[in-house]
Image 1 (cartoon, rainbow, N blue to C red):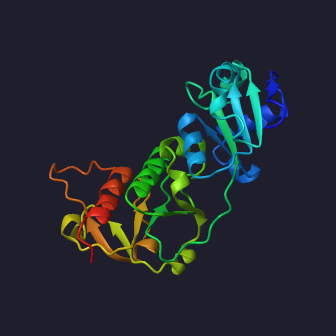
Image 2: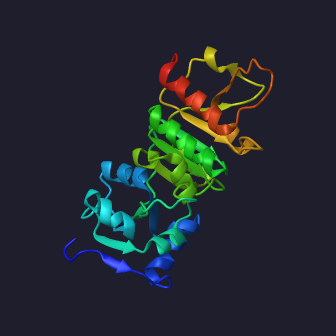
Image 3: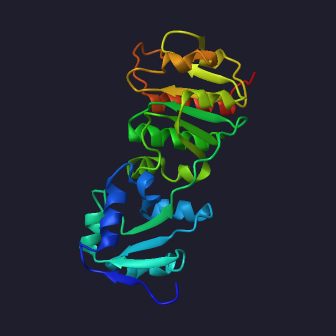
Length: 258
């Protein structure tokens, strides 16, 4: 930054309209080629992974208090009045700091990477939670089939808590593209297959996690080398896909490997 931040006080400003679209439209990043990160945690996570923001956006009240933490990190700094920042935000309580970054180019599928394949997982909270588990347990690639929640949407970003920047994310994947995977695929079932704690899990592998209501589509399920089930001694099938993913990925990271 060479000449200080730009102060914007008009809600009809073109940049403000674009920021609002990025923050509130789940797929705007695909059309605009930019992503909105809101709040200290996400901004810090991006910087720690070497991401250079195009734009740093501050609320006016925050700029006077803590601008030194982020000023100069982006190509350009902008300050919005508190009211306008709140109108941009999709949070109940606006984060007061946001970055705009370039939408990453869609990477090629790494055929040998420990992976998680998401088959039409639609709840943003579930998707973000699975990304966190993947990053925590040594999985480096997440492959989202068509019909899965937009990985870089504001809701998934919030739920992911910075995990996005530790992973290679491949979106809108067609079934035939999975032919490139060279690691065995593992899936779960509520009533079939070997108990997870008794299975010799392959490593690296690709865990296949399915739609919240319909599960894994048959067109994908046949690709799995192994199907396992999670013991639920309580007798009820209460686990949602995010909880099941956490259990399975942890088992891969710490259990017996075949």
